[in-house]
Length: 513
Image (cartoon, rainbow, N blue to C red; front, side, top):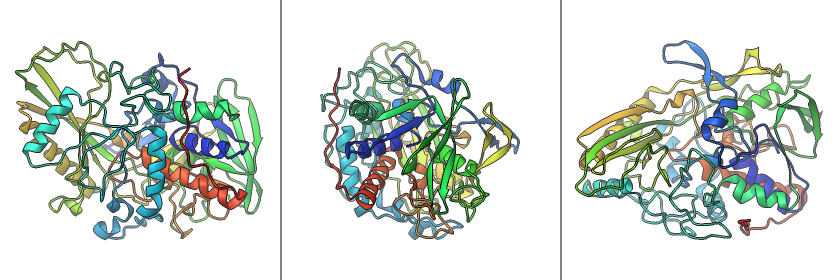
């Protein structure tokens, strides 16, 4: 298993508990609660990106985060299911230069959504108007923040249907995990209470106690071919001293994230695959999607005295407790598609008086996959002699218009909330983001995809990709829950297909010791 983030951790856990001997290779380090997101960012490699001016800079972010547990250690816990339109958006957008229809149906993925929601302990409730039916979450929603309550009331005054953001955060004691106390930042440090369902707490720690081997600080260099239709291992380099090692395996599963997995396949050249493994039709790396996003903030005075908050960094407690999907599909939106609006607690330091509030909304819009948006390898090399990663990305003009549409709706909500001043803030999504999709697209046609629907790389019987790279369309909500649900399904398919094992469908039990 290459990668220990959202998809790698759940896949390794599922295979290990079925009795398989699993080794996980992770480039990043273990992260203690006192290690910050900014600390981890300083050790992460950068990628080449093209700025709006056309100038290339090596300042792109090809990681969610580079550490054991990946981005789940620092994510806010948002755990949305994808909507039916996300599985077949061609009905609205038509066919582009890449297929947009997923090779899975909602009905195939729904059971895995429920399994992952149970494992993570999702706290949620209320009515989501963009879903056919509301999930039966294991826990009630976490307590709404003061800002979330204002957003909810304002949205309802406009006739909208806000609901609590579903979060992988325990609102009550759950399977050995403590409930959220709402006292610590969620996205600047790892939760020290174990309340957040990150990949380390829920999957890796239980699996390691049961025998899973995890090697941190070991970077996958290239995959090694056994014969024309299979691989037999991976060459790695220790990031601390540059020593090379080879790990042999019956099956190799790649879960580095959409950027890193594509780069690894492209680096894995040999006589049979001079352009990289799985790249016979020049599809590896294509269809790169970041999901377009932007923030809208508002300033308001309130008659209800607020608790004095000084130098609040990333907000104490959940980053989001209110969500709005009324504009997910909208006739007046470009192409009939809008996106998600959610409360998003500010990350910068704020010094507020008791009668002041800053309300911050994030707008998320799915970007249309394009063949020219891709991951490639550059001419330069890193300290290990490996080619630089290049993220060649430019949003579709219609996607830009959809983000503008959604930000205007967010401004309307803030004005309804009594904000006397509003302003926009860029997310710099084009520099790389925590939402990484495409590049190893799943499908049935090898000419337009890299893997089959079970994650197997076309033409190779024992090489799989299970991260967000397999998603043919990025969807308009936070992808972590869907990435993990797809990965769990692929792990179960592997167990049935290759080992004749019926998977264990129970949830992990997480100790607090």
